[in-house]
Image (cartoon, rainbow, N blue to C red):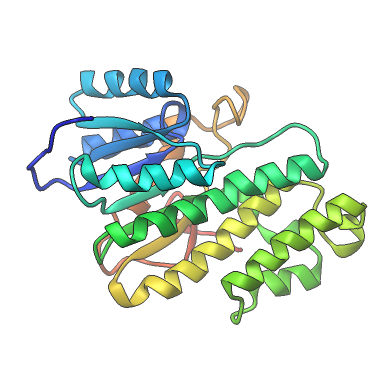
Amino acid sequence: MASKDTTDSPIAIVTGANRGIGLEVCRQLAANGTRVLLGCRDAAAGDKAVAALRKGGATAQALPLDVEQPASIRAFAAQAPGVWGAPRILINNAGVSLDGFNVAVARRTLAINFHGAELLTDALLPHMPSGSRIVMVSSGLGQLGSFGPALRRAFLDPGLTRAGLHALVAQFIAAVSDGSHRAQGWPASAYNVSKAAMNALTRLLAAELRPQGTLVNAISPGWVATDMGGRGAPRDVPTGARGIVWAAMLPDDGPTGGYFQDAEPMDW
């Protein structure tokens, strides 16, 4: 573990940070004077990413983190504040887009993309100061246009609670299991549902944390040429990362509970 750093520069945690958009977000944050703590499932890949960042002048450190495993999340949240101190920025970037569509794919996709982000955020919040920034790395595929009208209303209901959101996610997994998802108005994509759930969580967290001045926003990086997006995607990695960094560096009077791409609002 790195020794204590006594500087006043902010501390950011970035998950899924050893490659692609996550690594570029770390580079851009470091260029803005932020210390970056990388959460990486692969320890060797994390160390390689840290070496590259340090070569560019960044203050960086990696810790093991598998957001699919609650025990790993708890261990990470216990260790992270001991590296440099309280993190002010959390970027929930780790995610998967799995091949196929069945109940196993649905469960695992939601476990990583939605539940993992929620569990990590809840575990880190006690260590984060008022006025922090939380960024959910979403996707344009999380928009509700492919959902049936009743489901769109349910996701956008101003009275939605965390328990209600969890019930919607469980409803989707059950519908995939028994083959009724299309009849119920669900898209045949666990990834789309996971990002729609992340977007709804963004609104709920923003309302919960508004009294302490913590800003929470969902960011679509667009279709980016990464291992996940494919090399034929029209956007490069720095462009995709830029909007995420914008949300991480918002001023105190910046937006919260929003959904953006390139700093422009998107329809839910």
